[in-house]
Image 1 (cartoon, rainbow, N blue to C red):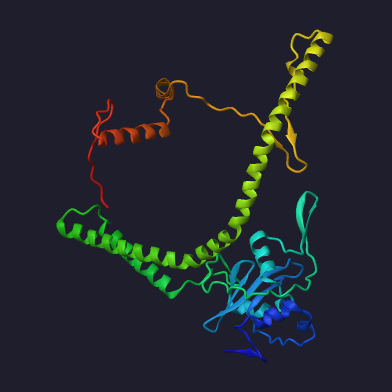
Image 2: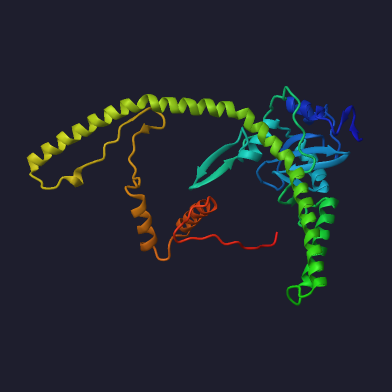
Amino acid sequence: MSTVTDYRVDDWTWWQTAVENPQRVMDGTLPVHDGEPMTGFYRTTTEKGGEYKPVAFWYVGGALQAAVDGKVASEDFARSIWTHACKRPVSHEAYLAKTEKGVWPDEVVAEIKGERQSLQAKPKTEPAPKRPVRQPSAEPNPRAVIGNNAGPAESAEFQQLKDEIDEWRRRLDKELKDGDPADEDSASRVSDIGTKLSELERQADQMRVAEKQPFLDGGREIDAKFKPLTNMAEDGKRKAKRAVTPYLQKKTAEEQERLRQEDAQRQQERRLDDAAGSRREPKAQVGNRKAVSLVKRKVAVIDDPVTLATFMLTKCDPPLPDLIEVIRTAALRMLKAGVAVTGAHLEEIEEAR
């Protein structure tokens, strides 16, 4: 494994030291070798005058891995930006803020001529993390590879499975070139191909689950971390709304009465036949932040389900698909239970599986 003086490129120590004191990178007391990125999180620009993008370097089995702006970067590209990125180490929290929210913690976003524009702040010294940061996944699943227009390289296992599926699909197309099977031998060959493709489908799904699992585990860890906070906030929000509802109802009734009296007085003074245009909907609200208020909305109340169903079926031409599906599902349950249903019956069909 390559080393830079007393620091290993696959260890977090160099990056943690740089985050704690970036000046050591600038004055040379923290050694930097061209083309030998040190494991950690950084930011750099990939073009002159461009914005700072988040960068991560790590090693898997001695091989350099890198991500720039949330996308996997080729090894050559990663090594080429190291001498620029090393001067701007960032904390793991700052890296996540940029990759997940699109904004650096020390970045100012302003609206200029109707457009949101970033006023990039000068990188500043950030405290080193107190606990080791979890290493990025060894096999990220990017949408593109920076520095390589050919797209992300797939694993040999993935490519082998893809080639095998392609081959069996070609065999199937060849068998069905002249139409569906017409004899025992042809039907047997097509059935065998279907069985093989079913096995390959299971293999592909197992590979998908395995590759996706680290991301699911990470998501569950984050959910578990923030769930107590969101629960506390939601419980407090509901409690606050329940507490102010009686007051809002009282205030709304008082406001309605006041408006009624004002309206009656205006009608008496101006002798208007219709003062509806001058009415304003009362809206009581409390709170100095986002107002909590009573609002009105319209809801449908079913007076007679049978009459309503008859109306919907006879007045809608053709009948609504969702309504037909609901009726079909209900009829199927009753028929399976042995209940005679007028206008519906059971049929047995065959289908390939």
